Image (cartoon, rainbow, N blue to C red; front, side, top):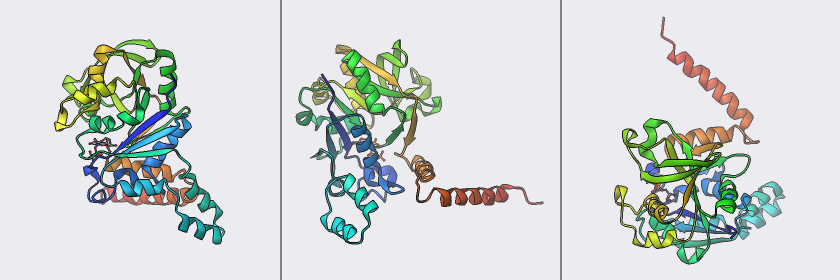
Length: 297
Ligand code: UTP
């Protein structure tokens, strides 16, 4: 069976970005000029996904509006002959998007459970907005390619520095069945470095079989008092095979402030409108900072 549906959970509280996220979903924070959620939607479309469900919380309107047409703005741009901008604005309206609310942010597992009726009895992908991925083949498509061979759930993982394991779900890898594709013995949510079974961390892309919903419906709160998707995947792994796919491309962690800033700079350095100015600015700033750092004679 082909994977056609994607679920994008976007109902978290975004506490790491307060106060910006008090009245706005963190998925709407822009990297230069594009909301992070648009990068995710583009990855889904570039992977051949046909239907996307966004699980939203309180700040639902701006996300919905972003992917809807804005007639007034489009007319205005047309009248002024700003065809390039018009194209940018129109690009986001042509997507098959659905929305559902998660009434209480009880955790990522609970957010995914809200997608049960939308997904039905099909395999599907979950894509988190905290991680932007870059590779020759989109990571979601890589997972879909694995599924064609294994027909099993496959979770994207990446090696992280050992001291960072407590920030992630970590896998205990079994046999490497083909290059970069591992059997998984078990999954551990946010282990301390001394307790982590490996440094292969779950990054924000999951391909799941629909049996995950039966597990999620019974899932008790885990780490942080939240219903954890990782715990549910660990349970699923006891009744059917779950694989881990090691990602070798570039990952931008936009879920915290530092990652968000570095991603913005790197994306800015490729942006046709500002790349030259930004580079000159960074070089000048670097010189200034290194002068400041020199010991005074
Ligand atoms: P995070 O762990 O990054 O939580 O969730 P968060 O609330 O968004 O951010 P911080 O940590 O408070 O800053 C991972 C993903 O799961 C979604 C989030 O929107 C994010 O995309 N999520 C999390 C939900 O949709 N619902 C939840 O109850 C929790």
